[in-house]
Image 1 (cartoon, rainbow, N blue to C red):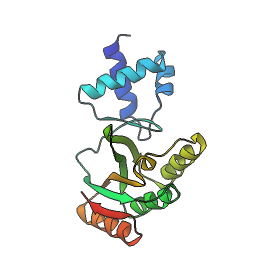
Image 2 (image 1 turned 90 degrees about the vertical axis):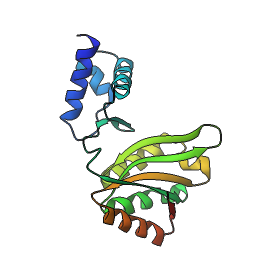
Image 3 (image 1 turned 180 degrees about the vertical axis):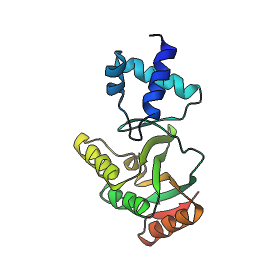
Image 4 (image 1 turned 135 degrees about the vertical axis):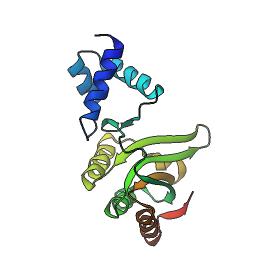
Length: 172
């Protein structure tokens, strides 16, 4: 199978799933190395395919134009990450990413695509088990999230809840 056929199969697998698919799974399914999959996904993204790379794997963002989005500026310590994320989810939102402004690297963005409390729990558990430093540590807790919801009213409610709990600095 050539690269173009393999990339079509990757897109087919991603389009048939609503949950992230790991590069390791794709590599086994397509009988290539994980690195080949990573390169194929990079090529797909360069071609304009909306493939998101999350901590749990790759996902095809089929709803890219269907959701309202807003970037919010928040601040908290690591211990309040789960609470902040749950506020967003519990009020009808999704957390697309986390963004920090690094003094050397500039804007650093990590796709999260958190939709449920289970997603959040898995994310927090993975962060704790890996002993990796969360991005908010680079900026003394200040960071941004791109949040998505079905409509602007839900985004307003999410902002109000984040403000009420002391997380929201402002929207950008």
